[in-house]
Length: 107
Image 1 (cartoon, helix red, strand yellow):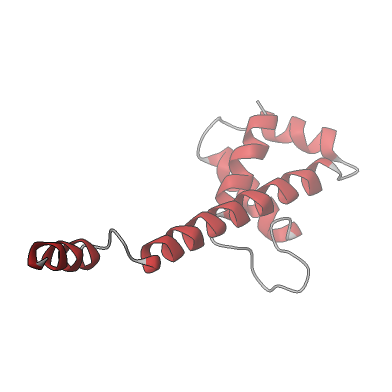
Image 2: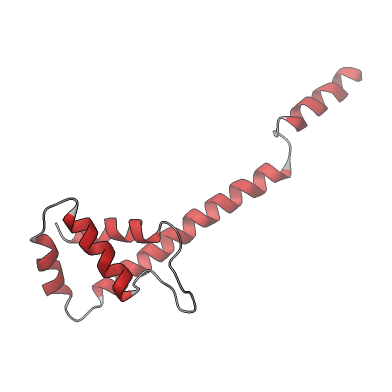
């Protein structure tokens, strides 16, 4: 019986049986999913621009790294493509994921 109590205390103290670990993991996954959703919305907003063909041609002309990513990030920030209605700034990580997606379109 004493061994069972000691085992339970050790296992619990290591976080194996706590709901806190489960809650924290769910929060992390939720935040990741939120960034993915916002990046997808950002990409669709870019694709719905009336000048998307010209903008893609302009981006394709830039060097593959550095300048292209900087230009895409500037476009996303200036046009607020990754910023949702009612927010002042995009979710952390949304601009980077959106940049990657738009960069893939501009290959």
